Length: 113
Image (cartoon, rainbow, N blue to C red):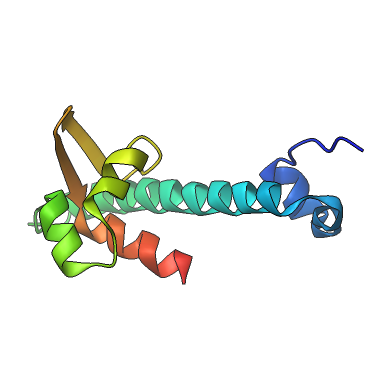
């Protein structure tokens, strides 16, 4: 029986639908959920940042290089380059240069645990 990918909305409304899905489709759904959560966090932070901008000085976001991320967190530099388009806290400056927002990375790692 050929199963179709479930949307996050379908999973939210009826989690029991996951029972019939194969492991790879469940893994893809989990990844989509994590990416959606990270995007929501980034959007929320931007919205809160706009509110804070009216209330006074704000600390600048800290941007890390892939080498700094690899030294400080359990993430390989190659993995960051391979997944840069899927991670909302990664900015692709050029083909060989990435900047990673440290706060966004920390929130994303916390969601994965």
